[in-house]
Length: 259
Image (cartoon, rainbow, N blue to C red):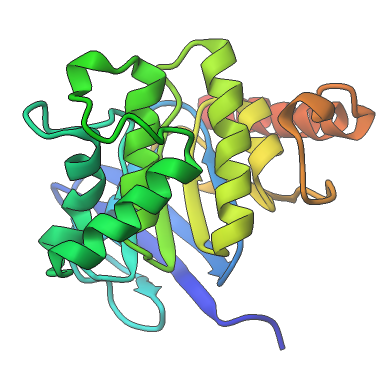
């Protein structure tokens, strides 16, 4: 038997107004410790799936979604959510921002501070604990957000295009950092991105969705060895083969939808 399921989505249908379908017949199983990326055109329901798993959107349609064997609950301590924007509190230092999620969950301050300092060191921000967000570059702010997310120790991470607004060099650096953190902390990850190269580089599987109503048209295993280096992958022919395969499925999903 394989590892237990972190997320189980079975024949899920969703409509917010009862008339317009948002998701249709979605089936997705993610095992504990897996890194799965969702790709697809804007509006296909990728973030909606994240919000369903986080308990931020109530599922009232057909089918079901479960997180760790139970219905999703907002604020569940085993679920961490990292948004596209860093969402740092501007009046708090990098250390206080890295502590914030833990403090919301009731972790004692001394324990939260120790954990936050450790994570800031892991993401390369030792010495910047007292810096306010306005004194940090965009990439450094995202490092603080990564530290805050991993510091909470959640077994499941939901990540919504966390590097989408970064420049190319900073993005590559943070993808490498994410790979290292996930290897070290062994969390399950559901990761939304529009960047196919990023999806191939970081994932165990990549799931391709069609335009609305969102359906899954492909679930591709990424059989690249770990640990990985983002830079080294650029020279790996199989990396580019997987990229082309994903692009083909994405185009196929568009054409079927348009047809």
